[in-house]
Image (tube, rainbow, N blue to C red; front, side, top):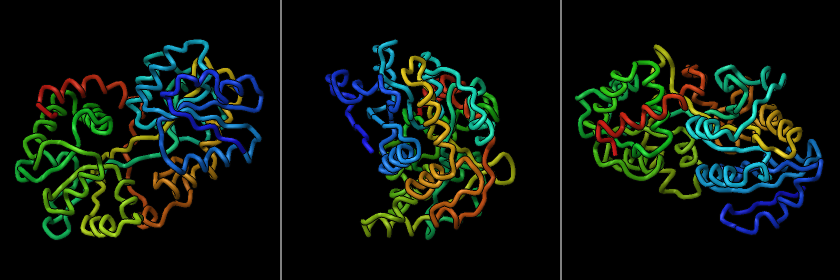
Length: 341
């Protein structure tokens, strides 16, 4: 099995192995903004199952989207992989995807994980949950995202900047549930409750809770699971100081986002691209995502990492993921108005 991994900054990509294989019937070329070791296992499993060679070009989402627009019909990309519905929606708006009508995907994936026109699909779920300091905070005080804006928590909250797509999608979900005015009121309340200026990544928010710098934080669940499994004892110890709350279990459910993919509009190997998308919905691929990268599967009945299993079933917000993208521009405007930097 051959996986060609290339940096998106390599100008010689057109002359490299990925392009030389685009004309082959047994190849699929993937532009990926995911940077996880688990994905290499996915590619190998796909080739073992189908005999189709996988070539991968890695970069961040904006970089890859800009590249595909520049390449136009000459682009070798068959599939684009990225994280967060907001980014997938932006690629859709740029005309980078084509519609896929697959019985396999329609049957395997919940409706909420399918863009209505089949332009892109969610294959793994990321719960954006609330973390609290086990020693300093009574978890019974928090049941929902809405509670984070309560003035009683002034100076207690750590969260990433408004530039972060995960927070943009969380606010996009609030817009859908509460309207623009209600979402802005919530965002202002969150800003008023910050323990520090937004900084760092999701892991930094969890570490802030563990150190006592803040009592509450918002982050994606798998960052916490990575810390529990870390080779670094200090990270494992920090994670043990932190508890997890799955918000809104008494109403709409916890906000989830996705790792997803779509078939590129100018795919040169469209049949192989569709086969790869269908493969991502298979039990084997779903298990790799759930056990190796600690993401929640989108298909029911899949074996998960023991930490995920220990949490049991929780209620997820069943908004169609496309809505998170549609509301993204307004979310950004709200962040600007409330001074969430």
